[in-house]
Length: 221
Image (cartoon, rainbow, N blue to C red; front, side, top):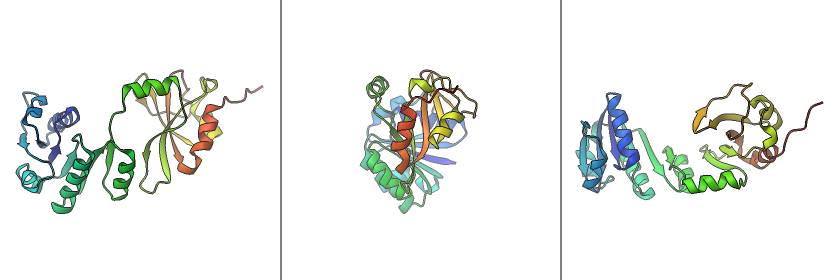
């Protein structure tokens, strides 16, 4: 498959090399020719200097034969505009755009354009670990009904199973982050100190579930 990428930053260049390693052809577009220095010497794809939502630039990058388009520049507006041009003008069904503003991301999800949030700032993550302030929404389905949220868990839950946590909260634990690695838990997976718990929950139930997670379970006799 041929893939066109807009934006040759750290994400764009990394995606380009991964795609090439899976035998896809790649063209990467960036307004700044200096950005292409991020590509490794062995990169075999094409580089195109120009605005990623310009039709002529996209044609030069091979958009007319592309099976997918990725917009990962530093600008929300540019990313979503390019994604729409790729889909609506050139008929590329498989498009994805990185969006920094979560409010915009939800709007574009409802338009049928998948979005990916940027990596969160390290300082913000440190502060959240020190002073947890409730649920942090990570994803919302296009209808706004279901959320994937990271919820702080009271220390009293450490040593409890995922099944016990789910039963108390009437919510589904989607995955855990443990020492930086993602874990798909089983019912008997035990919550450990330092685990980040990511939960699928109805949007109208977030407050209730957050309260359950923040409250230590009753000690059984």
